[in-house]
Length: 188
Length: 47
Image (cartoon, rainbow over all chains, first blue to last red; front, side):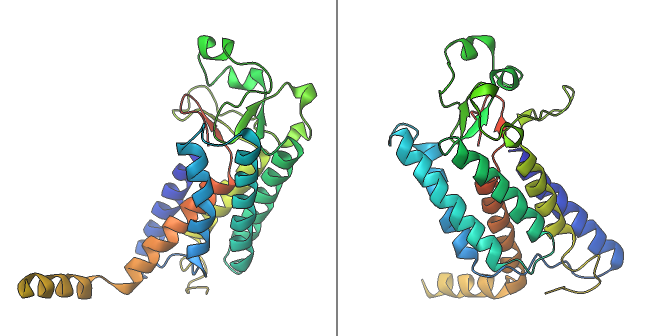
């Protein structure tokens, strides 16, 4: 949910900036928006019906979904910030594919997010979220791209995030701030 | 019935096409970010 925060803050900054410049705010000019919603659909099913399909099918659904979303991003690469987003999405897809289709999280990282009791029930290789899998660092391929970063302990939204997530957050933020405000026109 | 249809028609006319575009664009970006990003939230089980 930390990514929704970036969407909300990006939208707010974009609106405030447009208000400051006394210009109407237009969102990014996206083509084929249905493709983004269609691409996200398999992930909703994986998240809402966690035990419906075997892990391998869930991994395949996630891969298909992410490839469709990358296709949507590529179709809209003219939007400011989209290349950053594409880099982030590609890095996440890469590390997930290298680790059986799920995002690896180490027990040390998960320790900050889950209670001790919850972690005691888990062992390496277990899924700990719709997209995540608990893996020891030495078992993880491309470990530097995994969900290994944590915000400061005082931050109200605790989440483990990856290098790719940083690119995605900045890209989305920029797409919402940039459209017609910093460039002075719609930029589309 | 006709009155209701007329009211709905007036309501729809009042909705700015650009506002609908903006709502759809934001919904698409949310789908894009949540679908491509993989932060693991504490307690909620991730996503």
